Image (cartoon, rainbow, N blue to C red):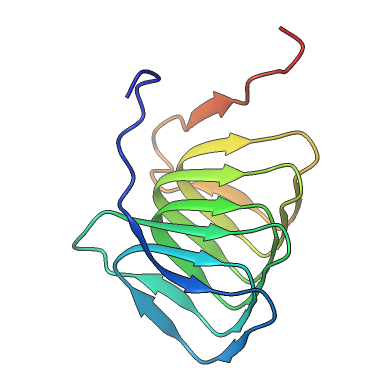
Amino acid sequence: MFNGKKAQPPIRTLIGEGSVLQGEIRFSDGLRIDGEVRGDVVADDAKPSVVVISERAKVIGRVHAAHVIVNGEVQGPVESHQLLELQPKARVVGDIRYEALEMHQGAQIDGELRPLKAAERPSLILAASNDA
């Protein structure tokens, strides 16, 4: 890719808007949530993974994946061992652990932000401004 980001795994699973799932979800590759999940969302650590929590989505539980993109609501801890993207409408109530963080203006966090490798300085990526 031109911007230096690795190619994402394909999104193979969709939880549609209006759906409510209760219980833990385990997945590999990609998962997009447009509805509501009441339980943990956990990716297979052996493979690259991405979870997208869209603007109208809500997760009540733990979220764990390599690449996590949040633009909706998460009530629970979030852990990303590659890249965490907090989009402008992200609302997270819970502690966050990350390898690299990209946070846009407007994202809200009620919890603690901590890098996975506490001894090292975290990798922060500034969101591009649309003013350029």
